[in-house]
Image 1 (cartoon, rainbow, N blue to C red):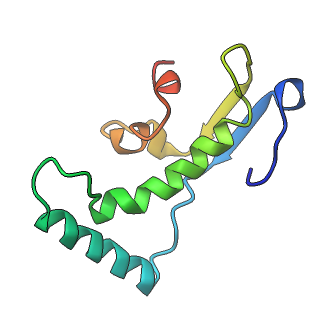
Image 2 (image 1 turned 120 degrees about the vertical axis):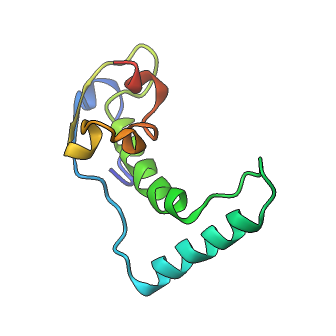
Length: 106
């Protein structure tokens, strides 16, 4: 969905297969460890992200961007299909918490 700008009747559906998590290459692992260390050292109530939240945030931001291609504004409509068990598995609220509030309510 990157770089595509279609509005209203041009897009009426989006299918997202999977969650685009980055591969756990050494640089990604180091960034996760770094974020864990910063979050642990930070005072409670700070806005720092731990490694796990940082790792998932980028992937879920990409999913939300793709979903936004089908529903662009308040009066728009479209179909959104999420194809991945992590969205619906019992106890898998970790993935759902990254969805937009309007979609979580459906």
